[in-house]
Length: 88
Image 1 (cartoon, rainbow, N blue to C red):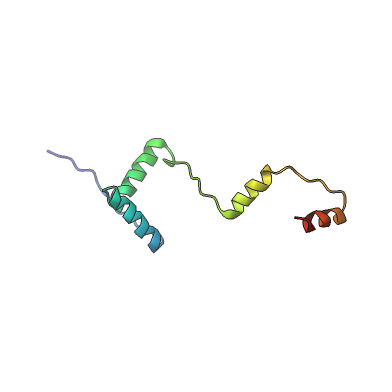
Image 2: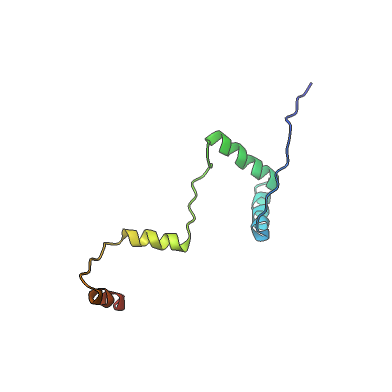
């Protein structure tokens, strides 16, 4: 006798273009979107977190990170600050 695992349905909402791009990608890998989602969920549970390190950051976050790497500039007056800003 074969015991089958109980199944449930998950509904998500996403952008149409993202879904289409994901379907094309997974189709090229020989799996459908549902299988890909199940693989993601199973790996997340196994890893106890996301199975990848998110790397995309917004342009604002990137600008903040770039600014944090720059050497700080210390100014003694508003006029000195204005001169620096005008020369950037």
